[in-house]
Image (cartoon, rainbow, N blue to C red; front, side, top):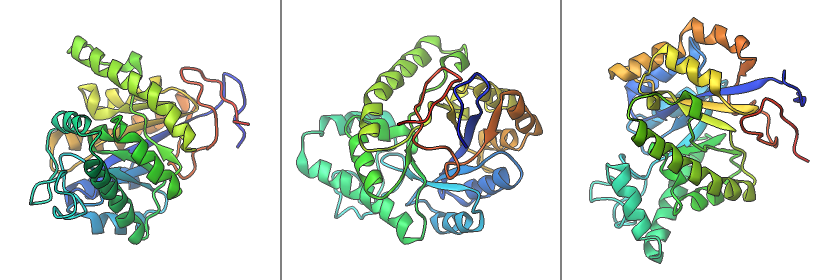
Length: 299
């Protein structure tokens, strides 16, 4: 499909579920959101408790674009502690707090053994998916730690070498930000804006595509239908992504599942002149003209 340079050009919205494979309750919610809702993409945790089940689901649902959810905090590693002693404890667990992990990774950025261990773990996570027969359509990460300056280039290099075509650039549409915690949310948004401006050049250098606008349902301060509609309404660019965390075991996760299965969301896509597609079918090699409805093929 050729996307015309007009105000009426179609917008592609990719609805992604993070944390697939983390637990059976997450997998069950992903299945329900896909079969009975707008969900068309998922990101799998390679060392998740329910990884094998997630792989089988990816095989059973060919319309669900399966990517990799790189985990470097608040989770377990694929490699044993003996191979990456600077990254995990003896139980193979990363630092739980993403903020503490990010600070630690920055402080150790010039230590070659540490960087080698990190790259080895990222490689191992990609390998586990591919050895299970899953070729990731996209890459993102747990708590967005892949956008960290020390980590991003590693992830891009590994992803490009393995033929992955999309990488997430998390940045909420400014118009969709909730009113509460103004200074905290504004500072966070500003940090992601700076990181995106830096990382976009790196991603393009490795030939990776990224959505022009990326919003997260759970980061809105509300995980209901109206929050999801708000994100879809303000989604930027010809290709936009809305990520979520459906989970049958938590109240927030159940609300997100309900939102993804809402007929109001599915019916509203036509109003926004949008189509819902996974990364498998999203148009590649297009210029991302952020904040505009016009779009043009790259030369």
